[in-house]
Length: 454
Image (cartoon, rainbow, N blue to C red; front, side, top):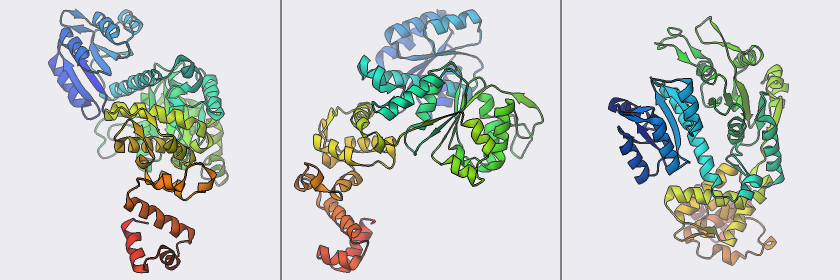
């Protein structure tokens, strides 16, 4: 579901241009008077307001106060062509997230919008927990009472107000980016930009340009200068996700940024100074890659001043009920549902599953189950096949759940799928033995294997 942004500016052209620039990522409303804007806030759920400092005869600071009085959780970004230190301080003091001068740079604006909305999401999330639970079991957007997660929170506290580089390790889906965000947004750089770059998602020939920018005319199609992520993040934090996928040639240039605190844009000879904190993440074994010559040793030790390891979900299963509760509340909002709980039997299945996709997979499982649920409860039949088959293929005698209960109410097709899959696995994929045990012909079994994509 898109987050809803309200633009309040007395210039209709500004409202329309910003609406056009942002509408693909956000649900946009706009108003050209303060009274109209405040009326929209009273009628609709607004996540963020882009507020002009002068709206006709109205003072934007006074409008800001009214917005915060109505709903203090609404993020507000002040826009003005007439900025001053005094008004900046006053706007921040009254609760504005930040203060931007016109004309606005859309890329910079989106960075600040995402940061403000990230804090808004955090405020929404912690509202579902008691004060005691907030303190003990939730750190920014991370949730967990297990000992491994408490150790992660302790490390973040130690790192948030220093400039040391950090490597966050762990399997995909464990929440490595959440750790990086927590370090940034809880520390001394929280008012500056947090810029993410996925080293695995960008082709090698484009990654250098993405990191350091380019000079106009440096290659075909470079019709104007472009800022790189490091320049955009100056004084803030650069999060290099999947650092293990960075090409060796580019690793040497990153090392220079760390050592000399400077970089050169593609096609330029100008050396630019930079002040950024680097947080990197990987699901690979960088030490092993280093020994194999696939990752620079000097870069590894420059980045790995501190290491935070994110535990796999199977290593902290005591956190699963709390995470499920969090996701239920999240998807209730998004799906307009009122699911209140998970049945004891379904919860036991969720605790038995090993989650190769970790927390991200658990979120998908809960979303899937809530779509299928027609009541205020998630039951066994609402869970995805892989969770149900995990139980059917495991040792039923080790739990008080009976096989009869597990298959009760399960559609025949679904049960047939699970039974064929389990029997094939037991027989090592041998179709003749499987067909004989199931009492069907090999041809029939082959048709079923094709039908169920086994």
